[in-house]
Image (cartoon, rainbow, N blue to C red):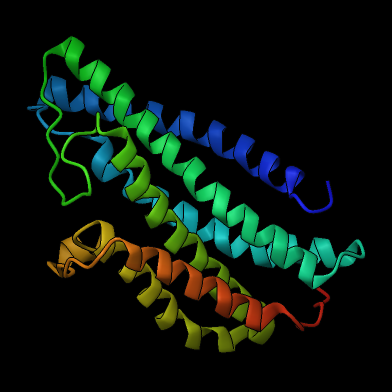
Length: 229
């Protein structure tokens, strides 16, 4: 179907599902290690899920830097890529959120068998991982912002090469808005530096993602095809 990116979505969803299964297995091993050699009383998936945000970021970068040239090389228009890219972002973020929710549920089941509480440390839209609808809402909004930021930065580097560095701060702003709307700090860096984000309405994350998508389109709508050989 020309108006729907079936192959683009299917290929990335399959790869992501396999990577997710491997990542969950690693997190499970870490949890077992903590239980054997320490005290396991908190969710291990909660901090581990921060790495998925960076996966979403690099997915956004690859969407522009890898997939757009393929579209153009096969005679597809920039407008069609923009349509397919927008649909992909809109559907891939909730797909990642579903995987995150499943990971919480798998962890909950394992903790229940071991009679261990699944406490959370960070601020969320949900207070219990069993509130699946809120888990899906939070992570969908977060991943939308991260993918949009990645696409924006990827588009800037594709078009202006080193000049793309100037767009990174804007990407950070988009990510920060997404995190402030659904969490309390930028992952990894924010917590280590003690930089808490103010709480803002959750809809701000959607607005940040739309801003990133709009700016990305402004950059790529007439971008020349680069010879990467």
